[in-house]
Length: 125
Image (tube, rainbow, N blue to C red; front, side, top):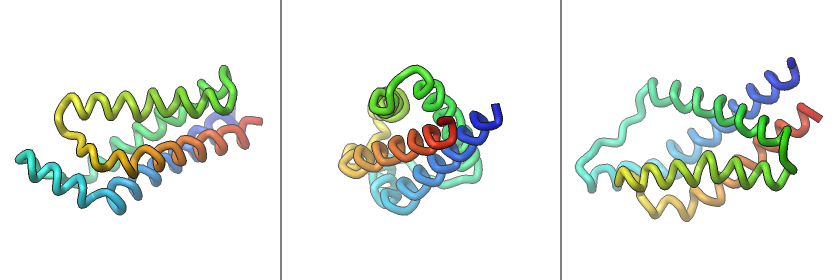
C-alpha cells in the first residue's frame, strides 16, 4: 500500500510540474493570445494550481491502475488517450483550445505520460 501511495504522489507531482511548465512557461503566450481573440481573459489563479494538482493526483492514480492491468506501452497509450486526447476534444468542443499548441502539447504530453509510467513502474516493481 505504501508503494502505491508513494508512486501516486511522486507521479502526481511530476504531472503537476510538467503541466505547469508546459502551460505557464512554454505555452502561456499562446493561451493568452487565443483567449484574447475570443474575448476571454486567461488568468493564472491559485485555485487553478490547486485544481491542476488534484487532476495530477487523480491522473497518477488512473495511470497506476492501468499499469496494474496492462503492459508499459498500453498504459502509456491508454493514459494519453484518457487524460489528454479526451481533454483536448472537450476543450475544443467548448471552443477554448488554441489548436497551435497541439504542435507542442502532443509530444510534451507523451513525455509527461512516459515519465509518469516509469515512476510508477520503478516504485511498484
